[in-house]
Image (cartoon, rainbow, N blue to C red; front, side, top):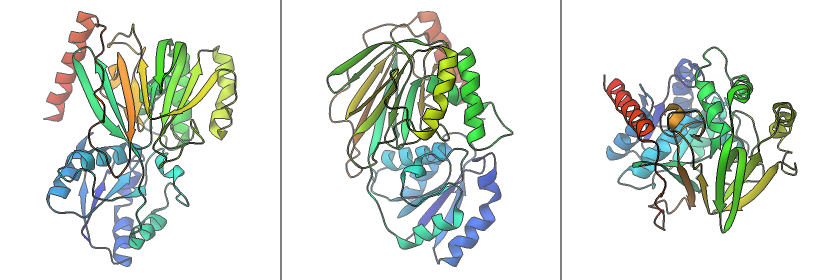
Length: 346
């Protein structure tokens, strides 16, 4: 078995890069034949995954956090082999939320992760697919752990600004900063024939149970049930929201009056008056903004789940978004995307 290890040296505020020597020592100790490739830019793990599979890799291993795992998953699904190569994980990220839904797996446990790789046991899990629309702009990605719309996305943006801290402290501070500036807007959430339309703090979708570095948004979610779990939180005063944070950290918020929990195969979230250039609305996918910066998902986000053994295109065509967006804001969004592509190509 040829194993390609995709290492994000920046993950965990540089922890993954510093542990490269220890990773190679553990791989050799267990007799695992491997090659290591490293990422150099956001999105690089997706390309490295595709390249490794084209070279004939029979297993990929993501070293990093949830964002790195997400990029490798998208590479596996986008490749010609269409998701038929198993994925191993060495969780050395800032949050590493996805592995908290796996039995007997601890974030940061390098030795335990390599030991599991040596057993060659594979567990089939679900993969979600999100489609974001903003006028003529469309973005489709897969996710393995979860995604959030509203405050969740604002927290993801804030976390990228914090450079000196690691772990749960990053996300807790990001939540507090986001709460101080975030202005909730109206959202409409549709799921399996039901509809919720009102002012919301956020709508969080979970394939896994934990998001945001330690918030158990969907504590009853299962990775292999063919369904997505949904947590909808109504707008509330800031002081009351602060009192709810400890409940989210323990996963005991599900019966709170401001919280709606559900389970569905397909979920659609719409923010009808979102401005793509604002912080009002966005989407966070597996710990990172789904798209670019603050304007990630203005308009509509549609999420569905496919079984891990069948991860092709969504079985039903996704409806078009009939509302337009402000033309000036549309041009700003298009220009920012072009600027980003230019910087990444340098």
